[in-house]
Image (spheres, helix red, strand yellow):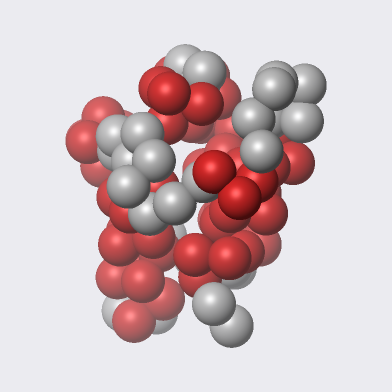
Length: 83
């Protein structure tokens, strides 16, 4: 399972209403450049927790640090490693 590709699919699903091409999303893509606000990030996190079956929910402190796709991938990798 490629974590980045799965997260990218979830991002694309959420931003369909926006004019952004999936191939433009990279690990370095900033979420605010995709038009994400704090509510969008929260919704994305819920989708990620469900998709990856993450048992321990992400804390507010962690969410506050999420700025890029890479940040999300790193958190998911850590959570999956520690489950």
